[in-house]
Image (cartoon, rainbow, N blue to C red):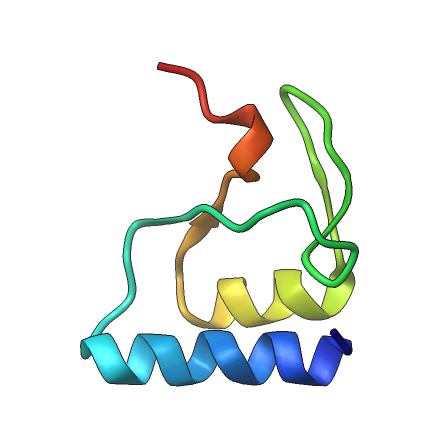
Length: 66
């Protein structure tokens, strides 16, 4: 999947649900997460800009505990 498609899918998802969750939990695709770290994952710059615009936090799926 290309980054533009990844970002567009998220925008359409937020629009479809009529809002944005406090936490977005994506899989660890390179379009969203460059490197999974337990405390400070490296988020793709384009994805980071989008989630900052929508005021949501990103916690990669493999890092969700509990």
